[in-house]
Amino acid sequence: MSVERVERAGIAVEGISVAGIETCLHLPGFKVAVDLGCSLREVVSCPTVLFTHAHVDHLGAVVSHCATRALQHMPPPTYVVPAPVAGNVRRLLDVWRDLDGSALPCTVVPLAPGEEHELGRGLVVRAFATFHRSPSLGYAILSRRQKLRPAYQGLPEAELRRLRVEEGVEISHAIETVEAAIPGDTLIDVVEREELVRTARLLILETTFVDGRVTVAEARGEGHIHLDEVVARAELFENEEILLVHFSARYRPAEIRAALRANLPEDLAGRVTAFLAGEGP
Image (tube, rainbow, N blue to C red):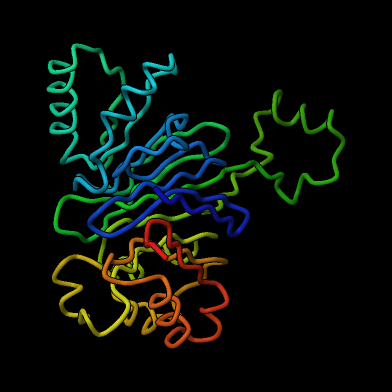
C-alpha cells in the first residue's frame, strides 16, 4: 500500500486517498487523523479520528483501528462523527463486539455544524456543513493562544499579575488561527460558503475529477468536486497551501499532474500540491 508523505504550510500530512477505494489522512503534528477507509500502521498511534461521512471507503477500517489500539494497550480512541450517523456507528461497534468477543473501547463524539471538540494543547476542531450524498461534515483545526492587549504591553510582570488577579482585568485576548481545513467529500459550494475553508493555512480539498471524462454536472451529481470548479473560483482561495486529494482511480498520476499544469492559474498553481498516494505509477 503506497503511503504519501508531504509537508505544506509547516503541517505534515501522510496517508492515502483514492476516490471510492480508500481514504485515510494523518496529521501527526495535531495527533489527529481524518477518515479510516483503510488500516494504516502510521495511524494506529493516532488517538483522535475525524470522520467526514460514513461511506465504506472513509469509515471501513474503524473497527481494525480500535482493536489494534486495544491490543497494543493504548488509550481508547475518540471518534468524531456527523451527529446523524453516531447511532449507527455505535451499533456497528456493538455488532463487532459481539462477533469478536472483545470490548473495543472507544468514545464516539457526535458533532453538528458549528460545534467544537477540544484536542488539547491549545487546539480545537470545529465542524462545518458540507454537501455530499450522505450526512457529512468538514473539519477545521484551529489553534488558540492568548495575546496581551495593546494597553498592557510593556508593563512589568508584577503589575500585570496584580491587574489580572487582584482587579480581575482582562489583560489579554484570544488569537485564533485556522491551521487546516478538511471538507471531505463535498460540492465546491463549501468554498464559497465557509470562511474557514478559504482562510485555512492548509486546505486539504477533494478534487475527484480533473478532465472531460467526467463533466462538472456529473461530478456534482455524485457529490464531488471537478478541477474546472476549482479553477473557476481561483480568486477565492486565500490559503497558504492547498493539498488536492481523493482523485478518481481512472486517472494516472501523470494525467493528474498534466491537468493541473494545463488548467491552474499561475498564482493558484504555486500553492497547489497533488496528493497521489495509492494512484499507482
